[in-house]
Length: 299
Image: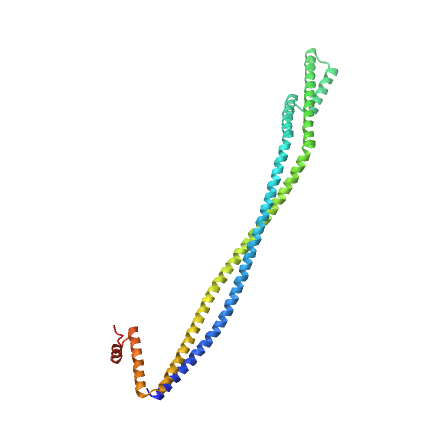
C-alpha cells in the first residue's frame, strides 16, 4: 500500500471519528435531558408515595379511635344492663299491680265518673219517684251493686296511683340515667360514623394517589431503561472512537515499514477480512477463499 493510500485511510478515519464525536455530543445532550426527566419523574413519584404513606397513616389512627369509641359504647351498654337489673324489682312490682288493677277494673265495669252518675240517678229515682215495690227492690239491689262497683273502682284507682308513684318516684332516676346513656351512645355512634366516612374518603384519595404513583414509577422505570440505553450507545461510540484511534496508530506505523513489511501487512489484513467474511457465511472470491484455506481457519 502506497503512502498516499495510507494518508487517505487516516483522513477517512479522522472524518469518521469527527462524525462519531458529533453523534456522541448529541447522545450526551439526550442523556442530560433524559437524566433531568428521570430525576423529575422520581421526585414526583416519591412525593406521591409520601402522600400515600400519610393517607394510610391517618385512617389507621381514625380506626383506632373508632375502636376506643366502640369500647366506650360497650361500657355504656354494660352500665345500662346494670341499671336494668336494678330496675327489675320495680318493674316486677308494676306488673303485679297492673294485673291487680285490671282485675278491679274488670269488676267495676266502668269509669268512676260513669258509676257515680249512675249511682246518683238511681238514688234520686228511689227517693223521688213513685214506683211499685218490685221496681223499688230492683233499684235497691242495683244501687248496692253500683256502690260495690264504686268501691272496687276506687281500689283500682288506688292501685293505679301506686303504679304511677313507682314510675314517677322510684323509676324516675333510672329513666333519667338511661336517657343520658342513650344520648351518650347516640353521640358516640355519630362520632364513629363520621370517623368511618372520613377514613373511607382518605382511603379513596390514597388509592387514587397510589395509582398515580404507580404510573409515575412505571414511567420512571421506562425512562431509566432509555437512559441506560443512551449511556450504552455513548459507551459503544466512545469505544469505537478509541478503536479508530488505534487504527490511526496502526496506519502511522505503516509509514515506517519497508515494502516487504507493507506487503505482508496487506496480506495479513486481507486474510483477516476473508476469514471474517467466511465465518459470517458471506460469499468469498477465489482470492479470499485461497487466503482462508492458507490461514487454516476453514473447517
